Length: 304
Length: 304
Image (cartoon, rainbow over all chains, first blue to last red; front, side, top):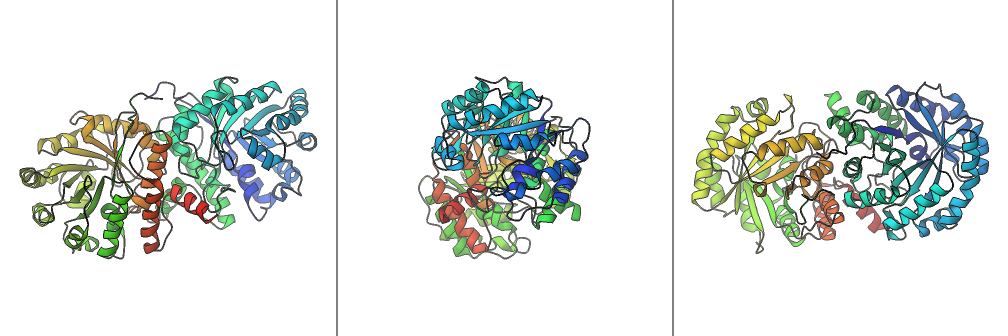
């Protein structure tokens, strides 16, 4: 086996934010808080909790203050939030997040359609947010979407990823996530996107964020591990779906990633059974089966 | 990327046999024949068509003669069948298969529960079948089940796989498949099972057969590719389910494997769109969605 593969991996569960943001019917703050509590109880050391976006655009996250204020924080756990602009940052800072997340797309077409400006403009707009956060001692994470493929442009060249990573580095983003937003990536393509990112960021400041729409997320995770990547975003119960293919899978399920990592002898600090319980809790609330093959197999087995 | 990874892969679609064998309601011969035709049209070069087992035990395959006789064979395509004993072989040979499949479990408990004899006894019983087939110029494939885990014994040591592979070699089995029958394997464990097999078989005579019950099949396929394995069993639309965890996934979907391989620049000779059509055909007949994330994503996209 490849000697670059790390012996320990850190997972960031993005379910409460990236996942629940795609739910048609907003989930009550109390349920979100309980989900965060269950995730930290299961051993997650970082959780993406909410975002500070206009409730007109994302009503699902209108309860951001309530959720952030309602969480009983656990020592050693980090709580991150999405801040799309300075107004979002100003609202977020009141709730004392450990990290903020800013974002950009590696695809011009996606940037235009999604946030109505060029990639370069979108990053420029984030500059004052990053500056303010760093001045306040809050860590800044950048999320690069569409690093492998784009629903409008198709395949994305690694050079586009390198360009975006450079822009992020330029405004002071400290950590960068390489996201395959529509899940079209396969192992070699994902490795190329990561290698492009490594031209601007140290391996310790890079994470992978893979979607399972085409069932490739675990193979892509393995491919990233082989480059030494040891940080990944995942979503409990595969929360999130795929806004570009209704009915298809979105974020890779935390359960499936943990199962693979533990099976490979890689530590995560996560208790898989408790994690499955957390996923079952939110899936029950949403009235559906977890989008995690591990959860489905284990829950079926438990029923005997 | 690992230089061992092959540039061309051969897939054996086991859907018509291994898949449809697990259907509660037998599928009509005409539908099976149409499925085989669609698979070869899509570019599959080998198809596991049926088995010659007592219809008392496996009524789903009682139409073996009808199916094998009903197929319009395509030059360059190989048709294999399962033959559990000499009686099965004698029935099979009338239908002129290109290959027969014999099987054994790497787990003693599984062997006892499944076929009521020890591993060594089960292989001895196959010796006359293998001898007869080879005398008739029919190629013999061995399928090793439970090479990573067993529903009764738990984890299976690589030494048990080596032992079984040695027994298979001893009776003249020409090609060997390393199966993770219950889908519990992860990349390193699967590599160990393959390495154990390679003590008796040449790389060119080894194939991987992974189940997706825990979502690990593509990661395991990637891990096998990295050892140079270039032959895999897969099942269109993920036909098969998992008899040990009702409602869970069984065989990895051919569509998902083809998508990954093509994405990695590995040739298969298969047309993914036609393959998805073949999977949609049989899934429609069975009244459910394909158990393939690629098929679900592509079919959803086609609908617009």
